[in-house]
Amino acid sequence: MITVDKEKCIGCGACGATCPDVFELAADGKAQTKDGADQGLPCVADAKAGCPVGAIAVE
Image (cartoon, rainbow, N blue to C red):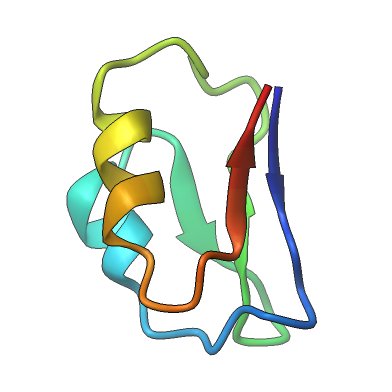
């Protein structure tokens, strides 16, 4: 399961650039996972590692 901490997220879009099939920016400008996205894609780990503020958690 992927969670994005909306309080930490700065809306830089790095996660969406790294893993566009899973992440997108919501109307509030913060990252979120796309509905029905395959959360097991290898790029999820890259997006987590590339988040400059550590807002992405993967369980």
